[in-house]
Amino acid sequence: MADAFENTRSRALTALAACLLPAAALFAASSFDGDEWFGKREVLAREAERLAAAYTNCAEKAGAPATDVSIPVETYDDGSVKTLIKALKAQFFQSSGLVWAQGVTVIQYDEKGSVAVRIDAERCVVDRNTKSGWADGCAKAVYGKTTVAGRNVYFSFEEQYISIFENAEIVSDEIKMKGIKL
Image 1: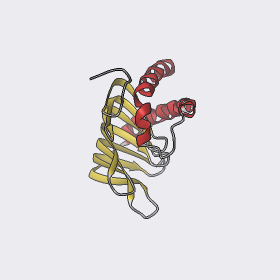
Image 2 (image 1 turned 180 degrees about the vertical axis):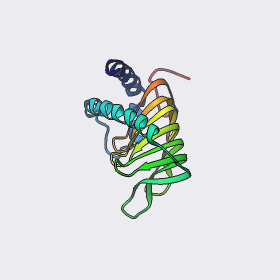
Image 3 (image 1 turned 30 degrees about the horizontal axis):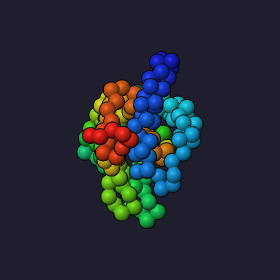
Image 4 (image 1 turned 120 degrees about the horizontal axis):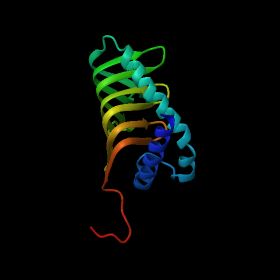
């Protein structure tokens, strides 16, 4: 499974890097360093594996999840919500800091309270400690004018990173290709 995961990850990373590098400015106030980003890919791939396994573990243990919940994951210094999980069903695993959910929307707000990032997923697990998650099944993320969608998606708000492992689709009004007229 690790080899298949590695091959799929490599293909997904290559496709995403080519399409999302121009969109990186949406997440970072400083300039984007491609070498640094590629250097982190091994660490992020391991994190994706860990969270995929955590999703399965949490799904098996979820006994009586709460319904129609909103769970803050991260706040700004002034106490306002930075990242919020909304779910039709969710269960918090206090010992691990994981939140398992179905019918999920993860929203990250900017400091003005506007939606900066939105992720919709069938099912996911979010690690409140690492501010990252694994969406099991179909998921869609919207960053400004860029939308990425697919199945089995790893995302990290802390690293400003997303990796789609199956059926990747990327649509962006921000990607400009030299010499191509539309």
